[in-house]
Image (cartoon, rainbow, N blue to C red; front, side, top):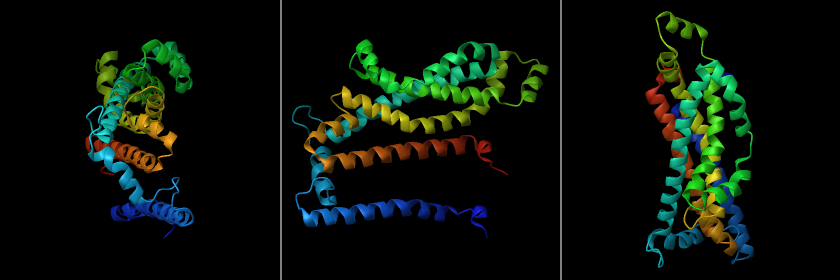
Amino acid sequence: MRWVNRQPRRGERLLLGALPILLLLLLYLVVAAQRHALNPADKILPLPRAMVAGMSALLFERDQLSGQFVFWADTLASLQTLGLGLAISTITALVVGLVLGVLPPVRATFGPLVTGIAVIPPIALLPILFIALGLGETAKVALIVIGISPVMVRDITAHVAALPKEQIIKAQTLGASSWQVMIRVALPQAMPRLLQAVRLALGPAWVFLISAEAIAADVGLGYRIFLVRRYLSMDVIIPYVAWIALLAILMDVTLTFLSRRCFPWAHGAGH
């Protein structure tokens, strides 16, 4: 059987997906062990025991100033900011994308504006946001929203605008207004695409969050990484980066599960 025709089973997919990760971990351990054999004080590639020692205080001991467990406080702060930014962006993408996709005059009027905003590097706006909105959470949330919502709006707009014209004509023949076409025809078919757009936006959203926290924050995963880098504390930085990756993967898996569970028809179920 040609490889192009072979579809791995669920167990095979899990094994094949885990194999590269395990190989990377093994490679890291080998290289780190070699570096420590040459220099036991090496801080660039810490061994697992050094990471456990470096993270134990952040995980299980309260900070003397704040009284909080630092690692969990950082995680909660970052997830709150990220979640609020994603929620606002998702609602914006759905509402604006439906309106632009269903109504050609509105799309012709505001489509170029959305495109123009989408191509602006969001990081370049960070100083402006901090000056205009201050150094609090508002500026960080705004950066995430400005960074991902225009791209999501464009994606939803293009998807809705590409729906078969026959569906819209049939709905109008049955007496549907523009509002009813938007809600009953376009909305159900836009929802799976919306979840896909959120999945694709997760990576950039994390980048904007970490960037904002690195510049102006007193708590958060990005803040902690850039705080300890001055001490070359790779035993803290690497676990934090791995934790961010794990959180992002869990979010992606959750969105995929919701999409397949709520909209099986969009994933070819029954075919």
